[in-house]
Picture 1 (tube, rainbow, N blue to C red):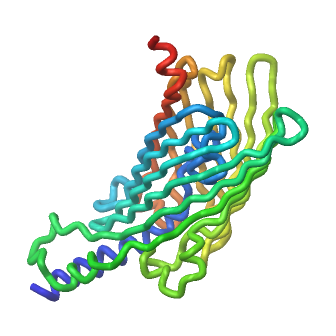
Picture 2 (picture 1 turned 120 degrees about the vertical axis):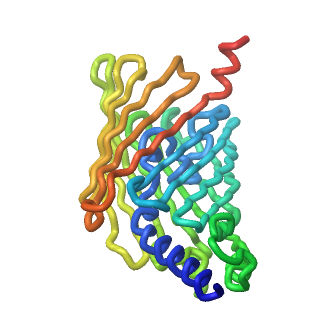
Picture 3 (picture 1 turned 180 degrees about the vertical axis):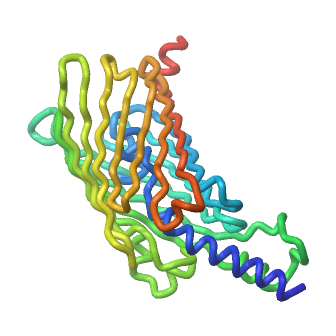
Length: 300
């Protein structure tokens, strides 16, 4: 029985390690919908209080395939922004949770529309094995030792510059994990995001608008990735149609709906990349954003 439980743990860890190939892909909502997901400097970017919920289901035809859930809340008053981010990634019976608090600061430049943003995430990461679905002894010593591993402190740093139409920003991820010799043990693999650089430009067209993004991501022990994204917003920003090309030879297509500046709903589909295209379907992602200040104001 001990060997059976150990085998279950080994298979789950192996699956999680293989799924890191997909986990290195940032949530697609970060391109236009919630930039705070990619960069702590974007916390409270637009002022007021915003709450975001997100869900991503990858390769749903495979049992135990990765599922991501995220919650963010960010707020800015004058120059100071605050945020809270909770991201849970589950693959098989292993769950990886990141909980971060964020502080950001905005420095207004000479022009009213130009500003610099700086931000830092600070929090904990933990990995746990779910014993509820084990066929065997859930009190096996191997499982206990696995779940007894301590959570680690970690953090990210971000910066950004924005004007009326142009933006450029970047972030350094998992700073402790990058310098720690045993940090990769917590991540259950050697592949994780190192840094992110992005730039964007908005093109107004009468009542419509085109938003563009170009991103470059560095990944430990993996080929760096490039993302080319564009979003078309209809009059009044009510509808948004987006497409993203990823250099891992996959593509993302999205549709968003904005209701009276109070809340926004986003749905996205990412085509599956090789070498698993014959065994799995693509990735579905959904996100909901609530502009709390405007929502409450409308209710008064």
